[in-house]
Amino acid sequence: MKTPDRGAFLLAAPAHLLLALTITIPAVYILWLSLNDSTFGTQLTFVGLSNYFDVFADPSFWNAAKNTFFVVNGIVYVEILLATLIAAVLVSGVPFRPVLIAIILVPYAASEVVTVLVWKSLMNPSYGMIGRTLIDLGMGLNWSVSPSDALVLVGIISVWQHLPFSFLLIYAGMMAIPKSLYEAAAIDGAGAIQTFFKVTLPLLVPTILVAIIFRFVFAFRLFSEVWLLTGGGPARMTEVLAVYLYRDAYRTGDFGAAAATGWLMVVGTLLFASVYLWFMHRGMRNGNV
Image 1 (cartoon, helix red, strand yellow):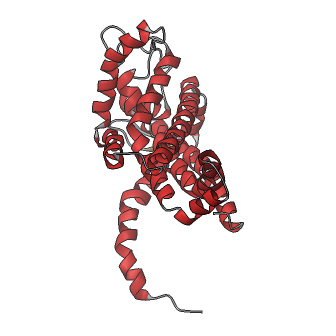
Image 2 (cartoon, one colour):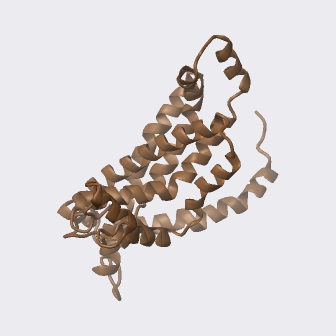
Image 3 (cartoon, rainbow, N blue to C red):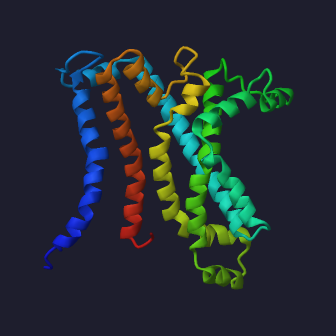
């Protein structure tokens, strides 16, 4: 068996050190903090799994977890669907494709804070251009008092903001599909829809799975949209896990419970991602990916 090259380890050492300093060490510290009672100006007191039990016993945590589950799933799947449809249209050869791609990428260049505040103004039922128009059409979102409407608006804002990321991944995946396959499909008499479902979509599955995994990881950290739009209200009904964590850490000063919530978010994200990683692994093992 070939002996590992020491030079390769030395070349990779800076990257490993950077990961350890920025990810591994803080993660281990947060795990340790979640096992202690901690607040402003006090020493750590080891309490074991008490913080986790306290979090699980809090109804607000389960409400935030439920909101996160539904909002994140809605955001990810709607975003992936839209990104796939837009990419398919652009790949088909529409005019002014570079200009259209530039327009699609514009939301990703905007700050999350600015994006949410602009959408909040536009969707205001009293003076917002979109909000007033929707009310006149009988489709208004009463997001300021209705938790469900507020979460729908949170999803719309998040999809608009992060759609360019999913689009870029899926568009690149479509562009990598060999043109000869489309030519063969055309010779066989396949139409545009048949070609998409028989050629494009099967070959695009690995890219879509990667996009879903990344978006689940990012979407689980959903914070700005909820905090700036509703602050988690009314009556904490629109809280998501990141907002719940923020309240524990900086409103009540319970750093132990906040750290426990953070690790529960990590575990939840890994569980979601592991499902799609399993699909990718199975596809690679069967030679389909």
